[in-house]
Image 1 (cartoon, one colour):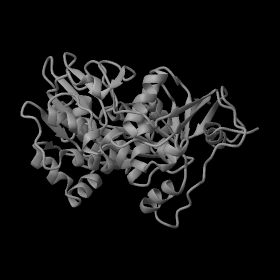
Image 2: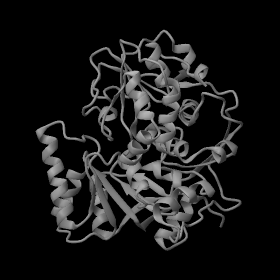
Image 3: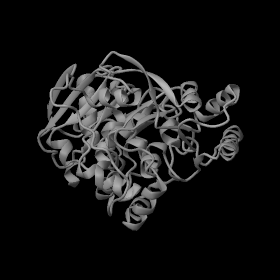
Image 4: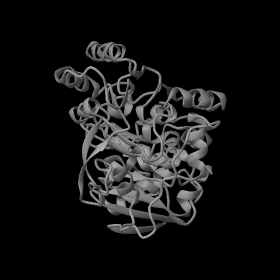
Length: 417
């Protein structure tokens, strides 16, 4: 029977033929935890008496890096000690966000089955992996046994047609789609993307869209594995490493198919306190902002920094706005330095912090005050997301965030392009 990508990957890892709705025990290729979830993983591993892991595993210190408190420092030490005992890899402070450093390091390839103790693990669908977030206890079970149970998700196909207008980016596309399909539009579904817009999109943009699929309710999602994917991976895993070409079969059955023509799409913003509460940036110019944040596992990559730098170049951030910028990894940080992007940011008046998640999850490096309005490139704007439930978070592309930082209110960035 013709299969979707999700059905193919789970069938291979279960060792038997599976279709949407089936349950199966599947072999896990790779798993990871971060400093917000690894403490529980460690506790469960000790309770289970596990002496060695049955699947590859790493930990990333990114949510509170460097540590902002004694309690967090104890967690970090616990992770480092555990890593030494089990001889597992740990990405320590300054390495960056898990969803950037793990694919950068070549740990994930097309066709892999990946579990992460973080909800945005779906990001790796940008390189053709079945990747999904699970709880810390489920992840510990995968480490102990090398397997976990799955229900094969039905698949939604999304075709994106047209051509991206100037000043409109991948973030605008996915915000528009979530606004149309809503936050429960793909609950426990897989999503396959295709169409000329995706074909022409760079890897950074594909990571952005895949990252936000969980905000659509999706279990996992997939971008095409094409020449761009191969080139991106070959630079990280080596020319001799076999990379699987994973595609859906002709005639695969989809639960639904959605087509979007984005030729006339305008810069889009998610308003508090839901990602699917969207509006055009041009219609929000009365919204005064106090903080602008550029970074995260959604938009902390080089293409994102280039877009923001084009807006900020030879301009000054509004005196009543604080702008915080966090590269998604050390590799991104170094490349941004080499390209002169960090120089542009600092001269504009922004503050560049170490690679990590702090501002996004509200652990440190930019917690807003009561009543303050933040425009952010992050993936969530739930009440309290950035550390203060009395603040208001708007989500937008790097270009829209940069333009808003200059103006002091939410602004359409197209005039800069």
